[in-house]
Amino acid sequence: MPNDTRIRADNVRCVLHVQEQLQCFEGLDDSIRGTPIEVIDQDHQACDAARLEQIGEGLVAGIAAATFGYGVACGLLAPKEPERRLVQEDDATARCFYSHLVWSARALGVLVVLQVVHKTLFAPLIITVATNAAFAAVTAAFLTHLVIRLGQIKKDRGEALLAAGNYYYACLKDYDTAVRYFEQARQFLPNSSQIPALLASVARRRGQWDRSESYFNQTERLDPRNVNLLGQHAQLYIELRRFPDALRKFDQVLDIMPGDVDTLAAKAAIAQAEGDLPRASALLAPLHPPAEDPQALETQVYQAILERRPGPMISRLKEVLAKPDPALASITGELRFYLGWAQEVAGDHTAAQESWRRARSELEPFLKEQPENFSLMGNLALTSMGLGDKAAAFKLIERAMAVITIEKDAVWGPIPIEILARVSARMGEPDRAIAALQKLLSIPYDGALAQNVPLTPALLQLDPMFDPLRNDPRFQTLVSGAAK
Image: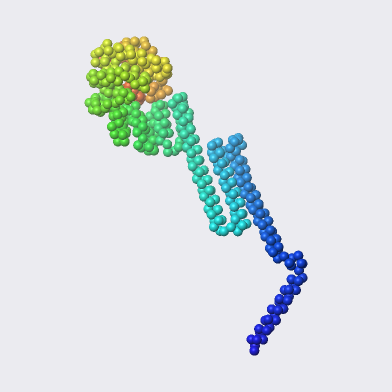
C-alpha cells in the first residue's frame, strides 16, 4: 500500500539522521563532550561579567553627570567667590541657584545609574516606569522649592531695602536716599502698601502735597481696609485744611472700626477747627478715653477751654494726675500744662501757677535726656509762658527752631512757629505773633496741640491764648479774611 511505503521511507531517514548526529558527537573533544553543564556555567559567567561592566559604565556616567553639574554650578555661580561669578546675581540668589543645580545634577546621575541597572538586569517595565515617575517628582520638587526660595529671597531683599529706607527716612532724615531705597524695594515688593505709604510720608515732609496724595491713593488701592493708612491719609487732608476730605476718610475708618475713640476725637478736632463747637461737643461728650490715651483726653480739655467752661475737665485731669501712669513719661507733664491752662481760663490763677511749676519740673528731666526733642521744647516754652518767664520761653523756641525748620520738614517744621505765635501773643510781642500767624495760615502743617490740627481763622477766634490780640486790626483781618 502506498501509505506503508511512505512510513518505511520516513523511518529510514530518521535512523540515518541519528547516526549522523552520533558521528558528530564522537568527533568532539573529550573535555567538552562529557561536560554539557560546564558549558552553561561558562556562558553565565560571561553574561555576569558583561552586566557588571555595563553597570560600571552606568555608574561612571552617573558620576560624570553629577560632576558636570557641580562644575557648571561652580563656574557660573561661584557661591564662595563672588568676584569669579559669571552670572551677575547677589550672593543669596547665587547660593540658591547653585545648590539646586548641584542637587539636580546628582539626581540626574542617580537616574542614569538606575536606568542602566534596570536595562542590564532586564527589570520589569513597571520598575522602570516607577523610577522615571520618581525622577519627575523629584525634578518638580526641586523646581517648586527653587521658585519658593527665590520668592523668599526676593521678599527678604525687598524688606532689607525697606528697612534701610526707613533708617534713612526716620533716623537720618535723608529723604533722597530713603526714596531711592523705597523705589528699589518696590521692585521686589510690588504689592506692599507700606512702600507707597512711606513714599507719601516722605513727600509730605518735602512739602510735595499732591505727590503725597497720589501715593496715599495707591496705598488704598492695595490695602483699602487698612485703618492706619486711612488715618494717615486723613491727616494729610487735615494738614491741607481739606476738612471734608479728612472727614470722609475718618468715616471709612469708623465703618471698619465703629466707635473708635481716637477717630471720633479727630473728627471733633476738625469741628473745632471749623468753629463748630456744638458738633465737636456732641462727638466728645460720649467719649471716656482712658488715661493712657492722652490725645483724646487733651482734645476734650481743649474743647472745654474753647468753650470757656473748663470745670469738669479740671476734675478729670486731677483724677488722672493723682496717680499718673509711669508709662506716660513726658505726657504727664504735658497733661499738667493743660491742667494749668484750664485752671487759668477758669480764673484760678494760684492753682494754675502751681500746676505749671510742677509741669516744668516734670518736663525738664526729659529734655535733658532728649535734647533734640522739639516737642518737649514747645511744651516747656508754653509752660514758661504761663509762669511769666519770657526769656526762658523764647530761648526754648529759638532752640526748637534750630532743631527743625520748614526746609527740613514741611509737616513739623512750622510747629515751633505756632509756639512762637502763642507765646508772643501772651508775652506782649504782637508784631512777632501776627507775623507768625500770617505765615502759619498760608501753609499746610501739623498743629502744635492735641490732634495736630493746624491753626485756622475759627481757632484764632476761639482760642483764649490769642485774647491779647483781639483788638489788633491785623489779627481781626486774619480772622475775618480767612473766614470768607
